[in-house]
Image (cartoon, rainbow, N blue to C red):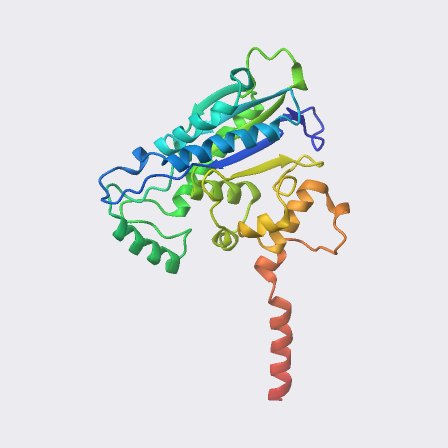
Length: 288
């Protein structure tokens, strides 16, 4: 575990929260299978195995590490975890919990591929966050249940439920949380964690199958994406310049930034106010 320097009291936090999207899944061509039972392809199995090796390589920077894992109940995520787990020695796994609130966005019950394509086009026009699939969920619905999960996650951390009972090393063991979930749920998780707006969420793109996103504790006790991912990768995932600047602040603090930076949420709400006032003044002068 890592100690947060921002707390007056000694507070132990997981060093990393690693978000993993499931591997490639088989196509449900006829819509005869419910989403939760769709299996991985051979490629998806290989992707999951490789992700496990890469994550273990990251964690091996400190030989005293353990992982606690939360996994969506879908077959695609459970199979991804099973293949990833081949890279983890048994004594490195502090625990695993199936978490229903991390499931995929509900698109309705049985459905065909053609209909889903049409609905996705409608969602893109309407907005991915607020559009609700018939008999299914909107992104806002997923936000609510992911927010609820985050409250439980913090209780697990505060009460040290993620720490193995047989841990005799005190705080020297580096605990990492791994969350195996789905594209939208992962984007919503980051939106909720970093307090991104709906407009900022609409910019985001899914990570690739079995691509993983690492949130790591920075020097000030804040989790950041910038410690393990460069600006190019963050831009590829859809983060704006302001969002990336915020990640750098979380990772390294304000002294690290050479550029002058203002309040990072200001532009989202007031960016055009001054310009609009100037335009109004000019309009009034020309009408006199």
